[in-house]
Length: 211
Image (tube, rainbow, N blue to C red; front, side):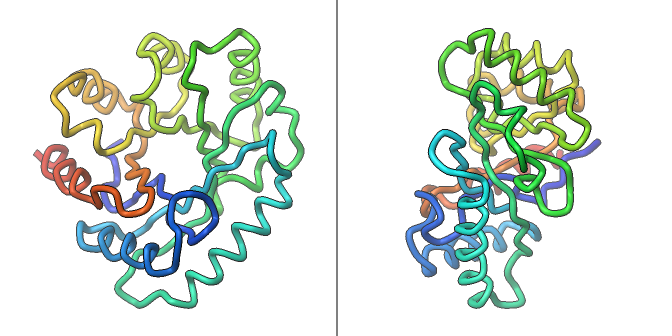
């Protein structure tokens, strides 16, 4: 399956919902930059930390900030889908309401892993999540984790999301392109926080992957 380069699967664009955008003005600039590089749909994936808040509280906060942003959108801006970047924790598979964190009307849930070596308890939780029939895991910014761990997940048919910036750097690019070629990478994301480097990396990725 070819990657849809008009879809930004991972973006922090809801004003004040997390540390991704601090205002309506910032969010509108983010959306304008996304539109300029051909993005038609953008997934708002604010951080959800299960050890810090309930799903109900998160959804309320996400709905409020999305409503404020929606009121300022113009016709030339990308369509916004609501989702979440969910940090894994021991026992996450037993948390009630997980499907509410999936992207839009899909069963896909964007999962963030810890940036240290994953203990067996985390692996057990990850495998338990994969066995659920009501959600499908998409691993956020897979390039940030141990390649050995990612290869293990690929063998278990876990879908990957890469951040666009990883493909514009020669180091390890061959590995990421292999993951794309074998179909393991389903989505690209900007993972934009504030304005950062905008969508310059995305624009370069479009040229690279369109060859």
